[in-house]
Image 1 (cartoon, rainbow, N blue to C red):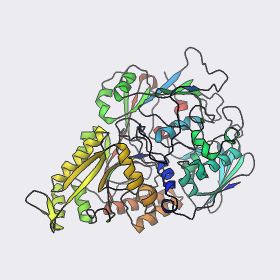
Image 2 (spheres, rainbow, N blue to C red):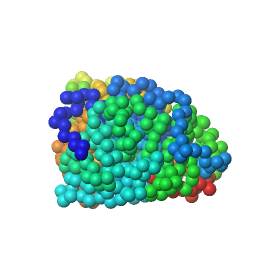
Image 3 (cartoon, rainbow, N blue to C red):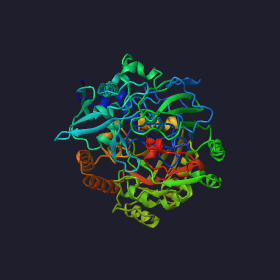
Image 4 (cartoon, rainbow, N blue to C red):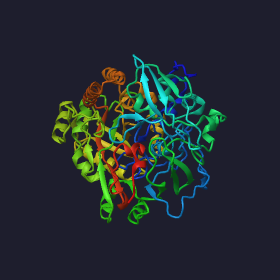
Length: 594
């Protein structure tokens, strides 16, 4: 049995470097780089800020060196290839599906995946105990054929499928599951999933070859749709690799043996990753021979490859909508996503006192014509973020607190709060001007457009707002390290499960994405209650209450929920993607190209 005692320490204080895996455990989008890593956002992806369930929205692959301590597997430039079937040649005309994108993952090893795309593609090769149904969003059996839960819902006993095998023919065992969680929960591995798992799980034990028990610290309602979906790795291949050596090991980069519907064939860095159909898959053998993820060097090339049918499908930036729409035989699908673009306001009075007053925060919100922003930046393919729960979520509800555009009301609020307009047109009170600086990712033209639009809107009501454009590396340092800013243009990709701890909980001030130091005891209580509440309707009500409180407090200004735009070539017109499929490639194996 592998048991991991719950840590007594606060990660950020007792072991500061451990905050990095937690941050990597989410998929962050803080300022997007045009279409690249798309994940499930509007295409405004950022250089890959780590990922994990509740993941901050995805960003394109970072070409700079990662911050000190950040996990990064080494991927050689040349193509590495393994023959998983004795002969990887499928003949002169294998049936292929080609996905295109601008981002490239760092690894496919599910213990080490640290960006949204890596997690998505890893799911083609590796299976978890459970999976997310791409149509319903519910947890469904994967390696586990069934499971039992004890009365207080703190222990899950999973039965492994008897017909589940590794790509090399070895049977999948409960010991593989115990081994995988042992790796994740060993701090020496530096898994991006470390913090999330050790905060929820106290022990994982293989009771026999087909039965594994997972014991939780306390009831955790999203367990089956979050942690239980993490890909399992083979003990018989990795058992002699030391935890601190795994990050440099070729497994997941130049070789990979999993249990998924596709087998890893080869990876040519900067060009493509090739997967071959697993004809012995226990659940569903793919309907075609080969799945390829092709990396395009830029948006123009991606567009050309879609037009020339070199790529069958790709997520695209809304800025390219008209260009793609003009292509013949290419279908454009727009669907709600999980990303929220917002402006985080600094509530730490040690940094700035500007946003301490609720009146100032409310005025900033009323001053924004977000409907115009949707049209200007997203060509209509986004929803105004009236609430904080993304429209694709089962927990989405219509809020009662609304901030429809009303610049006159914004002015009136500031007038009543004593912020009068000076001779220079800037509001001031007691000799102090109402001014602040907005930090945004200057590497991305779309983020620049959003930031400049925001500053213009606020200046119209007499607020002296300026914008500082920084490289993605510098912005990320503010997020993961210094937290120094007045206001920050931020994108966050919520998990399929609606837990919002990482952004609003006071526990997340040091260790996750509560970047502005927001504290509300009622929000903390409701978030904790929701995680132990197994009734979905009750959980929805919990998150609706959290939404109302957050909208009244406005620790951040919700802007929009960008749609996910997908370009589909003529060979796949009968295979519609879903918002969840874009998160996990859930039913790609069932697609059949024409």
